[in-house]
Each structure stands twice: as C-alpha cells, then as structure tokens.
Amino acid sequence: MKLYKSILFAGLMLTTVACKDFEEMNVNPNSPLLPNTASLFTNAMRTVGTINSQVGPAGFNITPALYVQQFSDVTYIEDSRYKTINFSYNGLYAGPLVNLQAIIDQNTNAATKASVAAYGSNNNQIAIARILKAYIFQWITDRWGDIPYSQALKGDQNFSPAFDKQQDIYNDLFKEYKEAAAQFDAGTAVKGDILLGGSAARWKKFAATQRMLAALQLSKVDPTKGKTEFAAAVAAGVLASNADNVKYTFLADANNENPLYTNYVRSNRKDFAVSSTFVDYLKKVSDPRLPYIAAPNQKGEFVGAPYAVFPAAGPAQNFSLAASTVSAQNAPANIVTYAEVLFAQAEAAKLGWITGDAKALYESAIQASLQQWMGANYTEAAYKTYIAQPDVAYTDAKGIELIATQRWIALFNQGTSAWNSWRRTGFPVLKPAASPLNGGTAIPRRLAYPVSTEGTLNTTNYNAVIASQGKDDQYTRVWWDKP
Image 1: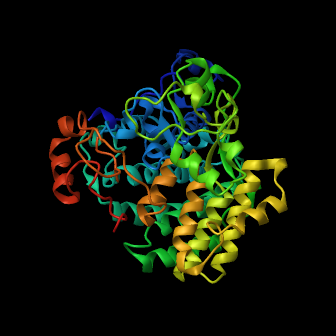
Image 2: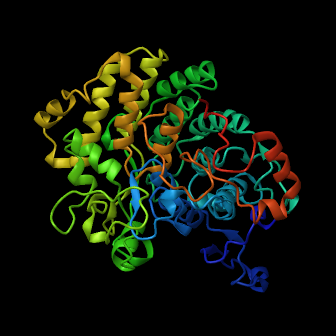
C-alpha cells in the first residue's frame, strides 16, 4: 500500500561525500548518499504547525473546532453540518511519520549513524524523532480511533498494515514518551529543529506534558492506569509557566504563513468566523479574552457567525473573524500551553489522582490563559473580577463542568484538543447542528477512515477494524470516549 511505503525524500537537501582520494573520483558527486536529517526534521515540524492551525490541507484541520463550535462556516454552510464523513490521514503517514522513521533508522544503522551525527548526536536525534512521532500518532488515533501503528512505516516489508487497537497504541505511547525523554545525551544539539531549537530540556517537558494529557484521556476507560501515568508524567517535569508554551511560529512569508491568513487575506475567502456559540458565551461572562480571540465586525461589534444556520446569515464582514493573535500572517499556532497543563491538573485533583487544591489549580489555569491571550494588557483586577462571577467561580459540585468549559475557551484555535476534552467530559453542553448533512442527529465523535485508500487498498484489515471497533462513521466512539 503506497501510503505506508518508504519514499524518496524528493525536494530535501541531500548530503554527498567529498572526494578525498583518487578512488572517490569515480563517485558521482550528484548522487544522494544520505538524507539530510536536519531537513527531515524541519519538514516534519512544519506539518506539526499545519495540523495545529485551523485551516489546513483540504480544510480537515478546522473540523474539530467546528464540532465544538469555536468556529462556524460563513458562506458554505456544510462543514458545521457534518457533511464530510471520511477524512484522510494519508499525508501524515507518507510525510512526517516516514521522515521521522527515516531519522530514527539513519541514526540507528551502524553504516550511517556516524555520518548523520553531523546534524546532532545520534541519541538526541532519535529522542526528538520518537517524541514527535508519538505526538503525531496520538493526534491521529484521537481522531480516528484504531489505526495502523505497529505495522506501519515498514516500507516494502508491509504494504497492508493491520490496525492496532487504540488501547494498545496508548500503552505504547506512554512508553515512547518516557523512553525517548531518557534517551537525550550531552552531545550536539539537533539541527533543523524549528519547534524547540534543539533544546533537550524543552523536549523533555513536551514529552512529559503529552504523556500527562494522554493519561487524562483514560479518566473514564481506565482511571487506574490514567492516575499512575498522570502522576509519573507530572513528576518527570511538565510545562511550568507560559514561557514553556510550545508554539509553531509561522513567518511573514507566503511559503510558510498562517493558514488562516491565507484564507482571510491572500485568497480573500473568509470561510470561517468565530461562532455565535463561542462569542455569545464569552460576552455572557464578560470574558476579557474576547477581543484577543475575535475581531470586531465592520460595525465595530463582536458578533459571532450563527452556527450551522442555512442559508448563510450574511457576508463575512457582518461577523467576527478570528483576531490577529491567531490569524495574522506570522501568528503562531499553539501546540500545548501552560494553561492546558493547569486545567488537566485541576481535573486530576478533582478526580483524586493527585494531591492539590482543584479550585486553586482551576483559578491558576484561568490566570495563565488570560496572561497568555492578553499579554501586556493583562491585569490582576480583570482576573479577580472574572473569576468572581457566578458562572465562573469554582464550586466543587460543578468542578468538572467548570474546568472543561474554561478549557474550551482557553483552547480556542486548538480544535482537536478542545474536541478531545468535550468528548471525554461532555462539557460545555452544546446543541448539534439543526439539520446535519451526514444522516445523523448528534455532534460527531470521530472521523471516518479514508475509505478510498483503506477500503480499496487495505480491504482485509479495513473490514477487520470495522468488525472490531464498530461502524466506520462519525458516531462510533473511540476507545477512551465512554459515556
């Protein structure tokens, strides 16, 4: 199956070995001998930036943000009505995942490891590649459920990989995050790392943080393991301040600009605005983050686009598009933030997984989010006024609902993370589209497989996963998504 076949790294810089003696004069100097692993890292990380922005290839990246009603479509009222059922993950396997596997292979193979060490110590390259590979696989399995994992990325050894159960994938991801973090050495920093600058310390925090967030996903399906993994991840050292926030930085350059900018400005489409559900809630609680999340419309007012209302309620200029903090040409895409860490810890404290005051952690999470979004305009007075409101003030009886609702706000423009939280907790309570186009009546809980490739080219394994996991539609819950 070509999706999982190892590919030549066309378009990437390739290294050649300079002639050092007469014998090497017979070697073609234009022949690619070893892949430039720095370039492989850079390309893989660019994909991470794209999947964490809201308008990506084929528009599928904004889909979860539409499901949880952070955004609404403006002109073509279809995506918010769940029209698309099958989504493709093919590009992730054939692109960043195969590149990261190549980095691991080149730094492991005795015949190549010495040469590629020019791009960072072998252990450091392997560690980052493992962490990033685990992160992408986690992103995929959270959307689709059971996916090709243990048999994937084998090249011509296996063109038709079986689907692994999500439970088994999660178990292996915990191992990968832990082992990879321990693999860093004091050798040369990795080159081509446009995400964390080759910093082993930052990658270790990122790995521990992802391990912690993955553990929280088990809160209903396997709380015992979730509690153990959560505590171990926190002990390993997670993000400790907004200074640790992991962001992908887009550039003021058409070749690597924020996809929302491309949609809003370069193509002048303006397909997506902040939804009325989201804007109206922020206005209800006088949320000081509103002007940093949404832009005023042509009348200078904050007006969300009606959610899933057909026909369209009006042109884009009538509604609030995403603010420049997330839609400017070089606006960064958040991958994981300190606020998300604190909300996870607040929920863990509420569940009794860790010691600590759930109320204090919840309030600290809100404070971190306000500081993140408002920057220099943040004030303690605004924060204290905000958390004192009846709909925001923490009460133990509504602890999970309050934590999840505030996390929904904090995770604006991080659709997959927000959708994960909503599926697992059920909060905030959202009304589905009034007239869905997918034959259902509820908000989707997963993405269906790319049937054009899996159903056609990997038929036996595709049929097996349907028999095991359930019908391949948007309403079969993934393993950790339990009522």
